[in-house]
Image 1: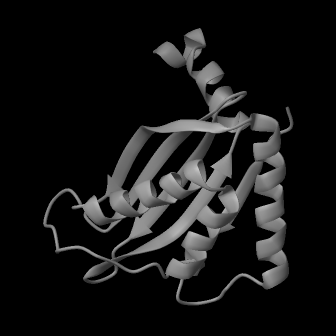
Image 2 (image 1 turned 45 degrees about the vertical axis):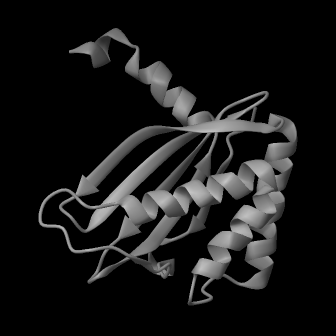
Length: 154
């Protein structure tokens, strides 16, 4: 299977507002988590198109051209057609940088092959913004293979 990696939004395309109280240590990421779960609920029950439209409605600045947006939606649709129906998702990892940046990596289970979505949220002041969403398939399996090598066990 070809490597499928699509960056849906670059870091400069951050504009999804999600209100969260200021936290002094680990980030209080309940709102971003709720946002991600809503994305996956739409992704699984309806379609990747509608899930991406959900992302677009949360974005207050249109930084991606309509042609680029259409290309991204078509690319994900073509990949999902090969992967089969979505059967669920699981959190792979959550990492943060202080209390202002949090990354969530999710395994999305499809009937024929898993993929990974990575979401990065940034909290510049008193609300969270979606900084980026990355969609990839083969990369996570390659990472798993690399981590199993003896030299990486040290």
